[in-house]
Image 1 (tube, helix red, strand yellow):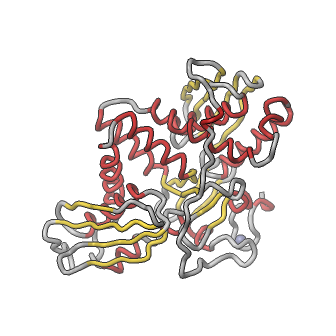
Image 2 (image 1 turned 45 degrees about the vertical axis):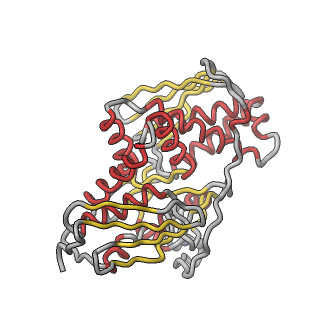
Length: 364
Ligand SMILES: [Zn+2]
């Protein structure tokens, strides 16, 4: 397996073939340069999705599948649409489609999505994929369904069953939904604000050194772990994550947005040490992983006399998750109930303000 890693920093070759870490707090896909990805704890995504389910008392799997399916259709179209005729070739050629699926499944493993294998394939009519230690089954199922629909050029249905550590996902052509190629909107990268600093990079492969310092990659098992916390990290396409949130909002109502902020703040509060000083430099430190995760570039942190915490994040990946993050940090460091407000990202940044009861510092 030695050849699969950079001889100097140890980062798997596939990891750097798949993504580019920019200095401005974004990570972009190399294969599809119009996609932006983020590295996020799998438990973070699951905490939010499970939390929404619990709060509304409804299994949201099918809504998640549908959001992810739409994103899958768009993204597969844009990734493979670059090479004219490739989608057509895949739908016609058995060997070629096997090769492409092999490549895609390999990429999924390197993104930390688990070990994926093709377990059965009848061209344009059925596809079976097995995944070990899936981080979130509805997300995977929606992804696979979307990709299948682009190649088979027809709607499909997805089913799954768990067997121990493995999930078996089956996609079959059919179902009532009409499939239209027009769903395939062209994803566009938002304009980004350039950074005023540079990431330290490996002199050989140019991957940021923080990647090899922070993460451990089990290439065989398709698992990436953050060394410090032991937590699993997955690389997901931001557009698909946001498509799931959008679908939930459309199906369940606008209050989903606040739910996402609340749940994210709970998650972050729970994972922030509480025995540290409540001040600006601690907040800077706690936001230090945003850039390397592709979540955005924090450029301003301030706490005023009244105890209001203001944070500016340029190139934010999701205003809701960042607002939830700042709120969670605030709650962990300053006592009492707190609330958060944020500005929507229209010009490449979000301004977040968290404030509590009188802003009393819990600890000096
Ligand atoms: Zn390297």
